[in-house]
Amino acid sequence: MYSELVMEHFSNPRNVGEIEDPDGVGVEGNPVCGDLMKITIKVEEDVIKDIKFKTFGCGAAVATSSMVTEMVKGKSIDEALKISNKTVAEALGGLPAQKMHCSNLAADALHRAIEDYHKRQRGNTSAEAAT
Image (cartoon, rainbow, N blue to C red; front, side, top):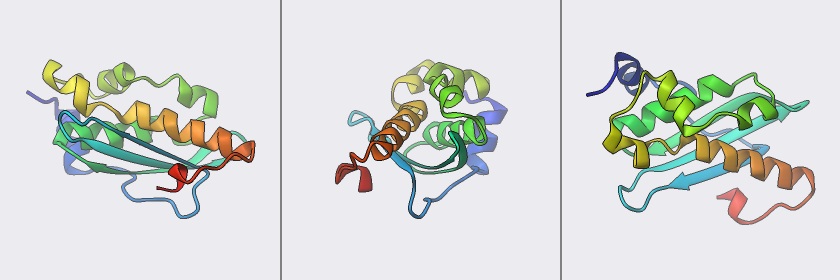
């Protein structure tokens, strides 16, 4: 059902946690299945220097969160914005069709964190961003 890489990222997730005083926060969830992902980023000179995640969900949700952090750490904001749920799933060797819609929200959470980063850069912080 799951690729070896999905199982590896589920069993040994990378970059778990939360960055103190992050430059961007992104939260994404799916009310149908209950998966919830939170990504925090630290950005220096337009490069994602650090990224952490907290995920409540199934093994695929944890694995996609772990993989997206690995894919973008050290990348520019522009490069990170090119990451899609499809590219994350492909990097993991695929996901079962029934898991694609609810478990692979990691790229969406990343994009929300980058949006939050841009808002903060413009001085438009929001109470929602602090959650």
